[in-house]
Length: 373
Image 1: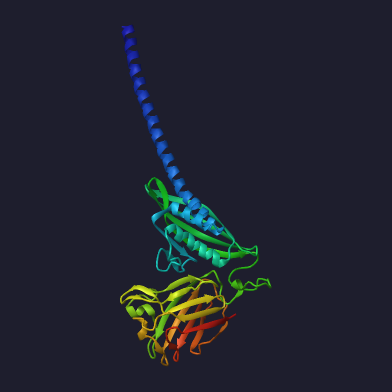
Image 2: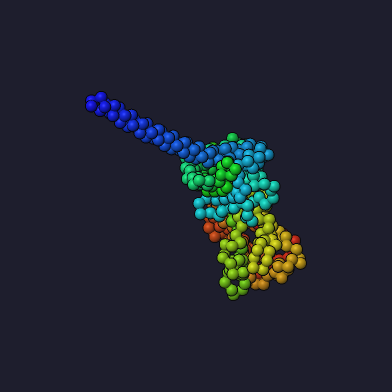
């Protein structure tokens, strides 16, 4: 009886050990699967983070160093087919969207070239010799094959006078997994702070330098954002924004640009597509520099929309152009070769050019406003 009991015990113990082995194997299998899943998640999150440094920062700095073709190729490799770029120079300010009607780059062969040219044109206008972009504190929120991320940018822009323009920005991007690779589908940059590092703060004021740095101390500050809105007022009538003529919001036709001494900011001013009356060609080419605002009527004499607008302004009529600047202007006065023009200083950030009774609006007319500080 004892021997049989022992044999039974051995058989029972063996069964217990077998079950225990299965449980342990199951635990190891589960732990291994969880480890693989955790590792896969970590790898995907890291690949999304790498877009900030490898796609944005590395590509943009190739452009900043003058290697435009390399920057284009790098962007082409990491941007999705439906990529969108948004730029806001300061919180609450106007937003530039590319691709889009307000994008400074309208001609390009690929989205990568569009993104690279957006940066290239800005860097060239500013006179930068090189750039260095640093990405900090990247946070990723991933959902299977899509992800969103947020971080900060410190962008260093090196100038010929050995000073550095430093910009701090909030940075957001979306990513999608295409063909086994993570690609950037949307970028949003919001400027938060900006200064020139060498004792000179951008935006005016005496920097103690007797040299020529008009882009810092001129009436207007180049390399900063400007918005333009047009309004009309007939004698005895209230002032209305241009879009109100079509029953649209006052800001519907607002245009935005960066101030540059080389390029025209609004080469197609008042030109709008897809209005209730169809496409409208531009009326003016408006070119701002650090010390002037220049107008040239570009609409043809027989333009289907503007031909009925051409002619002599009657007394009491005003055509106004509101310019809103990212940083305070230094304008204190003006002169002009147009006797029917006035410049109104509405605030430290807003100038208004107003054309009044006696102004003869005709195709080819041009005039300039010389700004004083």
